[in-house]
Length: 173
Ligand code: S3P
Image (cartoon, rainbow, N blue to C red; front, top):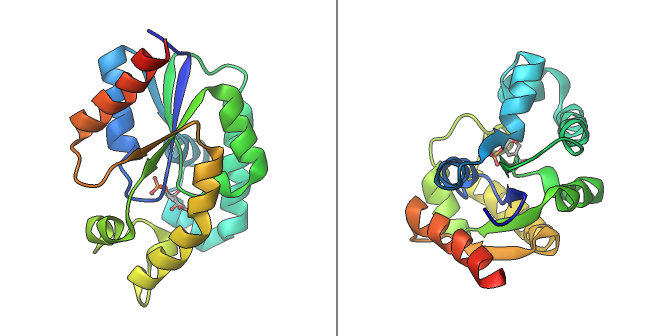
């Protein structure tokens, strides 16, 4: 294949995990997910980590996870938690690992996809749509500046998104 690692970033509900799994399968790469690495290492779900130790503690786990994999990640599609690019340091680590792709999704699609979701601590409680709106508007510029490639995901199937990602690399060659 064409590149070493592919890193997927984007808001919660943008399809990083589904697209990442399918992409890895198509190109014969390994698949990793920062949230899954954290859950496996801590032996706790993300929701429990937030509830017991708070967001800052979780953010430190995210940075520690990236530091653990940065030197030995190879032929991997890495899906990242939606908050990873908030920290400049994390964004730099992602760029060191490979091509960073932002799966950009509109506010309304995210709200539709995540309605009723109980696994994302940051969207629980009153008025989740307002939470999405606020977080998305503060994060969108960070995702954009961390990315090498931006792909709009609204109304596209997983397979279409995988094709679009692969098309970029073919074009680049
Ligand atoms: C978060 C996104 C989640 C998870 C945690 C915090 C965020 O991952 O890391 O709930 O801050 O956007 P997904 O983007 O995979 O939902």
